[in-house]
Structure formats: C-alpha cells, structure tokens
Image (cartoon, rainbow, N blue to C red; front, side, top):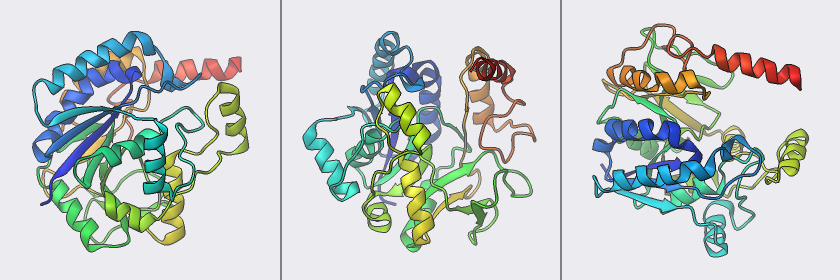
Length: 320
C-alpha cells in the first residue's frame, strides 16, 4: 500500500478535549500511517463558538503539540498559512483560481481544510477533526479504502463506519441520503460529504469533483455572518455534497475487515462531557458500547448525559 498521512485539524479552543482525544487518535491510527500532520489554525473567528477561550488555551495547546512531536518523529505541526501566495496556490489547486474563503459563515474552518490536504506529504490522506473518537483500530482499513478509491471512479472519499456497528448491519439516519453498498455488510454509499473524518486520494479527489466554487450561505446565515464579522459562505462539506449529488458521485462509509474502523462524534461540550471523557475514550477503545449507541454517529445519552446541555439550550431559546 502507498504511504498515508493522518491529518488532524486543531485550534487553540480545542484544547480541553484535544488533550485526551488527540493521544487517543494517535493510539488508534498511528500504527497504520507514515506521517501525522497536525494542522494548527491560529486565525481566530469573530463572535462564534469556534473562538472561545482562545488566549488562555493557546499556551496549553502549544505545550500539548510540543510534547507529542517530541515522542514521535512522524508527527509534525503546520500552522495554517493565510498568506496571499498560499491562498492563491490553494485556490488554483482546489477552486480553479476562484475565491477561497478563510472561514465559513459560522466562523468555522474553511481555508484550513484545503491547506491540510495540500500540506500532507503523501497524496493518500486520512483527515480527522479534533473531536472524533475512533473505534476498532483496524490495521487494514486504510489499504481497503485505498483499493476502493482506486477501483471505483464514482467514489470521492471513504470514511470509517459512522457509529459502532450493529449486529444486523443497519445504521441510524435519514435513508434519503444513503443506501447499502455492494461491498457488503456494514457498507453504505452517501450522497452527503462529511468533513469530520474522510480518507481521500488527493489527486483523485481533485479530478473527480472538479474545481469547487464558494457559495453564499442562506440569507439568514449571511446576515448573522456579517453581523459577527465572518465571511458569508457555506461550509466546504456543503460544496462537495453539491458535487456528489450533481455528478452521480458517492462517499463510501464502511467498517472493513475485523476488527474494522468506526467513528463516534461528541456533538456537545459540557462539564458532564469533560468529566466523562476519559471513561468514554476507554469504552470506545475497548469496544464496550451499549446497544442504544450502536449505529449512531453522535454520542447518545447512554454514554454521556446531555441533559445539562439540553436544559441550557431550551433556556437560551426561551430567552431569545
């Protein structure tokens, strides 16, 4: 198999969960890759959830990354380069020379995703967001994914199975977006792209989706973005999803040969989540998943009690 880069996006605000999840990601996937590229985004968004506690967390993030790079020569840190020259080069590579936004309308990452893909030493890249939990820890999954991409022109990317596997091979979710794949049990084709976790061949990705074009967010989101001081554009995964639907392309999610590879996403941040995170990571690594969690891509109440988050959100909506 060709060498693979594991590429993980980080920002200072990620430190409270990254201090535990990043070492977990390296334990689960490090043995299968030849490079680990930690992409650190130091461009702070304005007025968004992506900018919280930036100053106090940056030294802690710097210390975490320094400690990790000192233990493994495969690990390198790359700060996202927003210079005009780099922005132009990325725009030429992925957007046909048209505008490459710095952030999306929420203040979320945009430029940094494409910077990470371009900065990877190897064309085959497994990207993760900083909060993704990894189960199964298969040592063969990346070779299986590379073989699928090489043999099927309709595939843009592969992703580990979303959520721990169910015995019957099904998954939760809206069936309008996916269908079972001929690869077999625990394999599904999606018309929706996800930037949370994906394996691509960089050259094949560019060839198959073509030059992307930045799109304005819906009007209400444009107004919120302008009020907050963020760019008014849709997120990158929306742009690629449009290409999937328009050009008959797919993303393939699959578990692979035993023990397989799957992901779990903690969708909220709360005191309960941070208190439960060490146990949650341990349960993911051991595969100790309750039936109510299986087939679900987001962490459910059976693993973390989200009632404090829901109460706070209801209070916010009533106040608004």
